[in-house]
Length: 362
Image 1: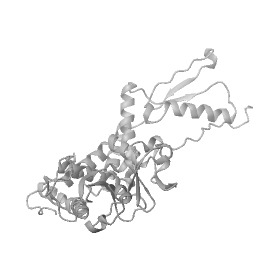
Image 2: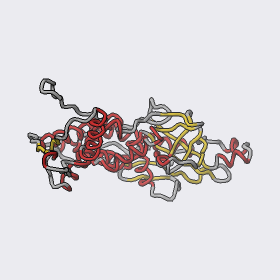
Image 3: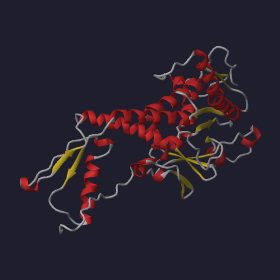
Image 4: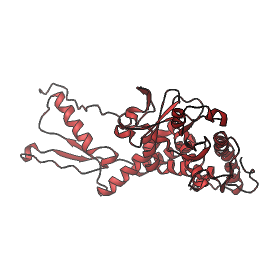
């Protein structure tokens, strides 16, 4: 390259992390079944976020416990689990996936013998929610699954009129509940804050890897062996980006082996001002966005703000609002769904209350 030529420093384009890792809730038909997300992995993706994003787990688990209330009373045996544990499981799926699922098992005479909550992440459906497919390995390319029909509340005379084949088919059925405005599958309440969940998870990964790598400073690598072809530049930059950059390789020191000192690779440390403050601000922003998606505030789940105080009256008003707009609708729906299954009121939730809160939900 002559002295008159303009020297340029170019970097290959880096694929955005979000495009590679976020699973979207796209619905695609696969025969009679509708897949949920790319490669059928959307529910597993949400479950992974729940397990690894502290704020999301706090909101979902805390809301599920609010739904279960202080106690759950039943007028008949529903299943072998404690009723409160059962309602809590239904509440958890409601706040993570936007829906819930019941397996209803009938006795020989067509009566309801048992009702069990099924994890929504193991359920797939046909387009009209008439047939359901159960497997615990959807994300691993499940081939075999159990097929269930949609639950129908047969009257005794209707059951008696069924052929034996139909009775056997409806011996175990599924009641699948989803929020309003959904397609084949429900809309997760956290969907609008998925990127914020990824930010919180990424920050945690970054700090862990920074600790493991002894807080080594960020570096700029200069190759001093001449300028290769543009294709080779992109390949080298892509390989180094995948290996050394990003939150999963936080500030790791890189090493270079060279034929001689004349062709060595130079490494220049880069000073980043207020690095810790930037991560702290980003962490607070992402956490607030997750709470906003659920129309909740941290104090409701035992996470007090470090700045301004929060009076008992403010907490009481905030809880009553969240209880009225987010918790009680789920409690009412669950109670109504059991009434639909059994044909009578069989379940009463005694809500968790502050002083002066509402009566039991039936």
